[in-house]
Image: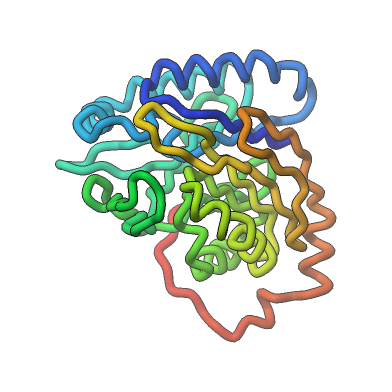
Length: 274
């Protein structure tokens, strides 16, 4: 079972942990016998805090990560921990962690593609590379839910990454996100559906939504898309959850009837951590 959480993420880490805890309490009855994966959005730790506050948090993010791990263990769930800033020198990685039900970090993906773009919104200019170090390694992790590939937000615009994850065995690809309103309205669904269809995977995108502490607005519309490109479940711009059980037989059927991986004439070169 997969649960996607969507909310207006705060700049205060303690508020976001409180929200996560409340949601886990509410989800207790969902998985008496089945494992549960809880997917969180990009920036769920402290969204769009002031640069010096975010760097200070990144330099001391270990206690926050420990709290997330303790929640996973306490509630016996897996957690895809959106992104958490983890310092390296004068910058930080946007690290997406996979935590198992024992409270262990079993995988870490550092966001590869950084959002250095101009957008027609109130902020206008985004330069993620000013504060963030680009990752280099691809990550596919074995879980009770299948082989899961990890990506983050802007990564979805680069189909080669998704093709490489598929070649590494990914059956589900997670895309924790914080899309702007203009780019969300124009590109959110087309990009995600294209990546799901091309890669023949279940695609799970947990997103932030609403107007945040600094006035920035994000698009929401968290979604789960099938390997055939169908919208299995999608939210609007409200704070809400998706609960969904992927049909892995459907994934197998799609791949058998249209074997894109064996037909593909292009090879991917990449670094991989498993």
